[in-house]
Length: 417
Image 1 (cartoon, rainbow, N blue to C red):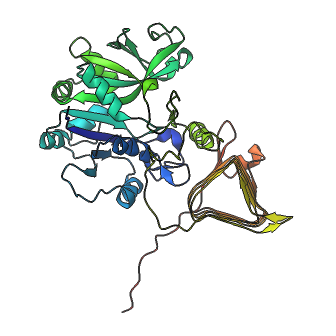
Image 2 (cartoon, rainbow, N blue to C red; image 1 turned 90 degrees about the vertical axis):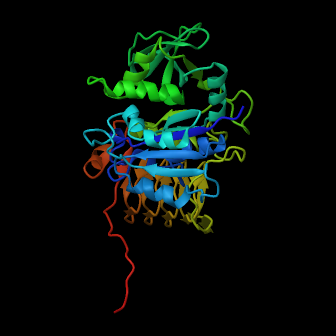
Image 3 (tube, rainbow, N blue to C red; image 1 turned 180 degrees about the vertical axis):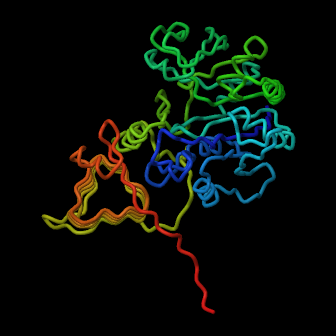
């Protein structure tokens, strides 16, 4: 069966719980895993699934995200049905407002659907770290002859208070939505788990247009799919939950559980980065059949220098990106972005370091997230004394230190006159 598929990626979230990482950038543009950005996961899932017609809906602090999309995600326009286009709020509502919710973001861009006339519209968020074969979800949607299919993650019941929970029959038909309710119904036949909504949807185009237009007429609606539109569609639309645990990624071991992490807090973001260090990580960045795509930069390879007793360049159980120089220093259990210089006798332990940072001689860092372009002075000791760290840096309740650098002016080209 040939289906025309149009994708919308919701990348306009403010990401306030990730502050200060989102002080100057949208959450989807936050670096992850060394060389990547959070948005790269959903875009890679779409492209690897054979979906090349993609609109990215942006809003808050979008410059960093726009730059990243420009650097690495332009297909070149070889075919008319291959494009990835960032779309800001177009002020098409009567009040000329910003996107007011997930459904309103789609409503303001209905002209893009009209121009494409797709059979199926997929609406996915850009806030999570996960691998997903979206083609399988679309196949399930068609097999069920569904109007709406919602990606559902089996989750321990004790976490029901933190998610929107989907209530289903044994066949997967959706019969209820429960927003952050600790007593939400469990999965059929499994009293210990609930279906948590992942906020990823597949819509048959005709039904999507109908329910969005109806919602715009409701003055009490917050114009959100999970909170307003889908609960009102129960009994009127054929809606099914797609069990994310059944999703199979080409190149992964048969039966391996798919990876999904909500990185909405600094601690969760840090833990997801630390997941990459394992000998057999749950999230495999080395699967050539399902590559994680990102912007391409002309970086030199990483370099490890000196082999002296008290000055040996080593990195153990770590992810090291291009352009890094580990010069007579030690890196352990860490994730380093591009162009990190770790000077002699410095120690970096259990840290996440963004691009273009310089770690001074004999400095010691422990459980730190270091923002871009930071210079750590020689001999600094950070991450070992929480009370002292709080005088200078943002520190989470679990003790993770977020180090920010001073803003540097943009380097402009000069001319002689």
